[in-house]
Amino acid sequence: MRGCCHACRRARIRPLGPRRDRGGNSSPGGRGTAGQGGGRVAERDRHRRRRRLHAGRAEAVPGRRVAGRVRRRARRTRRRPRPRGPAAVTHRIKLGTAVTVLSTDDPIRVFQQLATAASLAPGRIELVAGRGSSTITFPLFDQDERDYDMLYASKLDLLMAVNAGENITWQGPHRKRPLQNVTVFPRPEEPLKIWLGTGGSPHSVGRAVELGLPMFLGVLGGTPAHWSRYGHAYRDAWTASGHPAEESAIAVAVHGFVAESGARARSTYLEHDHRMMAEGLAELGRPAPSRADRAANHGPDGMVFVGGPDEIADRVFHLHGLLGHTRQILQMDVGGMPQRDFLHGIELLGTKVLPQIRAELANP
Image (cartoon, rainbow, N blue to C red; front, top):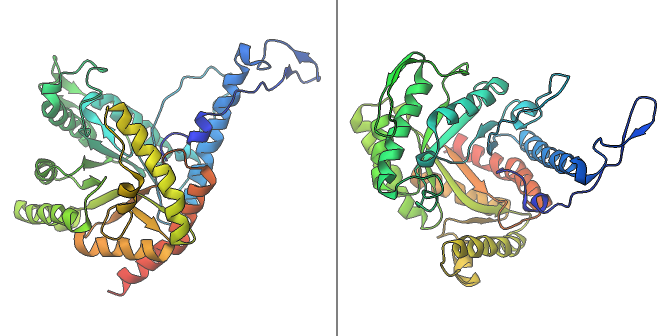
């Protein structure tokens, strides 16, 4: 779950009416009109309700992980605010950042944001740290594209040092001033789990092994056989490095969608998938692929997982046999897909797909 859905972003601002005191008298200047801030409050409340609905639906489904963005807001209130985000209203599911583009972010601030979330969900907050698939945002954050790899390597090293413990002394090329005996607060009850995110760079596979980090593959294309090579390279290098075998892990994130039937899944998803690709590539000045080209990636030889529950279970298990991954993520809410469709997809993943995979793994 990344932010709110497309429909929510387009929601109109509606006035809530005048504020009334305990005696029932109305008073102007409260949250009654959009011009005085009431509309903003209404829209913010709708966003919060949708985020809680997304998280609550995932919480009811076993084995789910919610990926989103952690934000801090300052509020003026006479009463102590009640935490109402996904971390506060769930108890079992993992909560992660999808991917944090560390090259253009501040590793200390990233750690503080997630440590704050960990105070509400101890042991359930995770971070995927990636370089980013392009340098398109570097000018926005006043970064030099020539420092693409240096920034990521230096910031990842600092993030790991801050996460490892207190009273750190550290220096690196992306900071002008070294840190001397510094402790970053707040501190989580236990270190955050950090995944190294990669879109398929062999160098990133080696870096994950060198740092002893689990590897998170963000997949946009290719074939299962192609991606299996990254899994073999990671595990072979992990064993050769002497790391404990039980600490290696591979996660795979793909686009996909599950519906009651394969035909319905493909017809629903193709519309939104094509729109997402067209809009994203237009921002880069590149032409959009045809619908036929996108549909070709939805088949068994592609890496877009679209189909009915049985088909998705078969494809996940087939990829597991090739790659040996321990976590599978499907990003379904793309291209303005209606909320009801991907919430139902979440239910099918937990109630129809996951039991089949667990049964297969229990009886190899």
